[in-house]
Amino acid sequence: MANSGSFLGFVHRRRRGAELFLLVLALAVGLGAYAAVGLGVNDEVPTDIVVYGGWLATLSIAAHVAVRLTAPYADPVLLPVVTALNGLGLAVIYRLDLARDNELARQQLTWMTIGMVLFVLTLAFLRDHRLLQRFTYTSGLAAIVLLILPMLPLIGVSIHGARIWIRLGPIGFQPGEIAKVLLVITFAGYLVLHRDALALAGRRFLFVDLPRGRDLGPILAMWVVSLAILVLQRDLGSSLLFFGIFLTMLYIATERPGWLVVGGALFMGGALMALQIFSHVQSRVDAWLDPFASWETGSQQVGNSLFGMAWGGLLGRGLGLGRPELTSFSESDFIIGAIGEELGLTGVMAVLVLYGLIVERGLRAALICRDAFGKLVASGLALVVALQVFVVVGGVTRLIPVTGLTTPFLSYGGSSLVMNWVIVALLLRISDHARRPVPNLSTDTEGASEETQVVKLR
Image 1 (cartoon, rainbow, N blue to C red):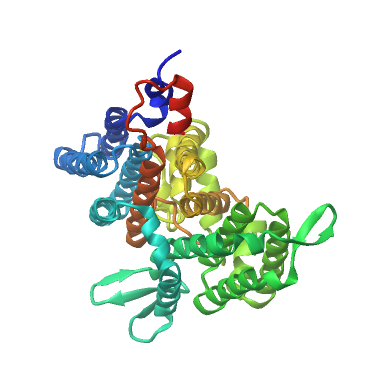
Image 2: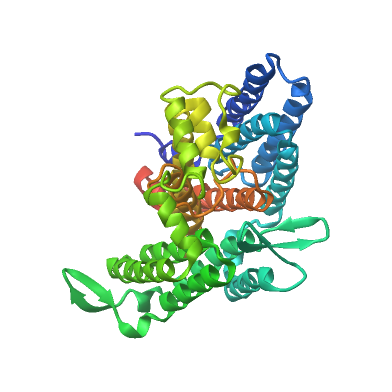
């Protein structure tokens, strides 16, 4: 029988070499896509590919070194996967820039740089994720303030009908992107303290134990907050995201299906009420039910995206050889449609697999984490990515109505990109803590049996 060190070695290997190898492959994906765009549009490799590739490589290696120094036991897959997605997103945005004579890819690269700087700073200064539990209610208060900011005069800005932006001089960003991370921390801290009470069963209905009436306060409060976001900011996506995160984290903490029943009923009631009251919700539902009914007078985004993906077929037209610029917001809300047109169903499936890996690695970190707070934070952050991808891809493919959220790491948008890099840093911090070997408290294990050593390390 192998000794205890080899018994636990497969769990506690640092795997930084594997991360570096995967990171090289991720850079090849981004640079290869960038070169393919130039060849497809101009029949030549972009002249700035050396500078562009050098900058991407510098950012990626800096992030890898930061992980190696500050979180040596962290998951080796997360950083390469998000780097590949970010690189592919930059290439697709650059392809749209060539068709529209814009410079959004340059701005996105700047936001990526800021995001990776915050990624490094988060790992450097947050050495133990459990410290965040001290700021449970402070994070909640900060999140509420951030959600209110777009409603204030002078700094609040309404763009495309949604009042979710603030502008301070030349800088504009969405406070809700920061709020979603703070809310995950708040929900996790609150549920750790109150999950025993929330897990108590009330009346039984159709083989499901519903929660007690006295415990419905938190979910009703979150439902009201979500409706307020929908009413005041006209932001259907954020409203759905915040309520969905709280509901799923509540289910994970209590393991009570009754909360899903109550939350589902509240969601359906809110959705029907919004459909009857708000015209922008009605228009999105109409475009979902029949995207071609009002082609001349209504929105053509969904229809154009469906045409493009159908034209792309299984393997796509090739980067630079389609017409994704015909779809409005193809650099942000509908970037999956652009990928489906030029990389085909195969490219879309590959992107979804990468997102699946992010969610899987986040949930894996939650499973092996030794503290309840870390489990809930990791689960919540993984669910943030999962819900955003489901809502965005579902809207583009006409599975559900379009909501206006961005596709993580792919879509153009500085606020979203920066905070998604912070999310990855938090997941790596929790993963590093969970994968570290448990300290051996014995001062003399030479004479101990192998079975005893294994029990102590567990």
